[in-house]
Image 1 (cartoon, rainbow, N blue to C red):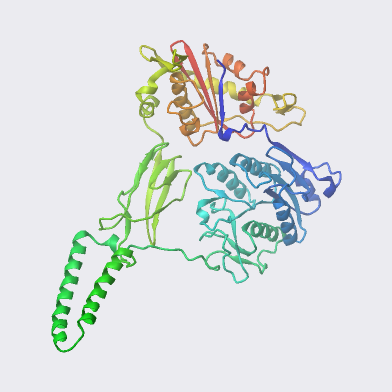
Image 2: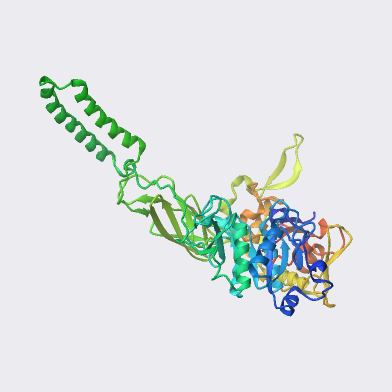
Length: 580
């Protein structure tokens, strides 16, 4: 049986990309050098414009399928604004990572940023925004690498009227994030906002605002720009509705009983004064109306919850939380000394790559510490979460995720009614062949770094060449880094594959649920425990485009880390390679 191949977002690394940088002859003529060389020769600032493409750029490339031209006009508009605000002091490398509808994926953005670094640009402009997801740390890492190299990354705040904490790449503090305002320095309705905003620009959208700041930086005139204003609090933030702590939240049952008793006593006292007044000619209807009005007001205040108790601090019930990688735990925010928990809570993590949080459920991703913050109205609480390396054997971990039903081996056959036939795993033997791990990884890296490697392209005719000794081709590859997290994921998936040999996990979830760090996977079953023989089968030059999937994965410029293992199940060997 052949191998099983899976890639994040169902996209095969490199197969749809046109990573070669092309010269726009209409702009620069028959120039044969690189974009970096051209910018240096002409005294220009080299700007990477990651967008929908640009028809006016001096150099262009595409990391998505199709032409590198701009079918929407968005990228070309950004190109023009950058040039205008720079005073013509730029050379633009357009990298198309968004389609003509403005859509894209994480892999395309990563590849675009990677290409910008390879071209050694001076500034990166990203007039784009996406909802934040836990896996965005992949993009965060390469953009932070750019900043560490001294390459400013200017990005749009986004046009969803939300907090930039919820949008990528605007929520990366080290980047230059730009919002849009009007001439009165008031946030336009669509612009995202946040206390970490770097600049507000008088513009119709945050995309335009980011392009303008990029141009000003390139032209050395940002400080003098009259339509650019420093970030919070120089620009009016939107009014944010706050619930605070309502009277209903703050009061216990005993408190409410006491208030009701006090109200009744007050009404009795009032009636005691009102009844004699009736005999002196005061209208009874008016007197009773006063009491009724007071009671109605008290009820309305309780019903609406508009009274603010104030003064009660929100805290976490837990002093702290310690997790293993891939493990989850719960945090509970409460009002100190009160019985009732807060209403709507917004949750934040200052290091999503370490620990993410969703409605109080915290999941560990990487070793380190993260501060989890809960915000409800005007109240907030913080709790430190520590993530450690997972303890215990893989078998112990697997016992938690595989129920007894899944511990029945799938025979691959069906009965007369079409139902899958399983056989009990006993008395079968299952052994983790950790002695083969270093050997298979060495085989993978030897193949990856060998000279003049290539893989078949989707057209079934042409090939992409790597490690070319002639100096051409798609690049030179370094050895994969061995990842502890990917090794752990590979061991889990290898044992799961013994029970069910498929491109999904035994519980039906996709393979990427095994770890946030897995971006591609190969599973291969053989009757051999020889890593060299297994590699010959996996990376054969013969076969179709699909049959060369593992070969492409190993030779991919997108992947940079690996984990690989083998599990022996009776006389069969299940090999798993996880790519990150």
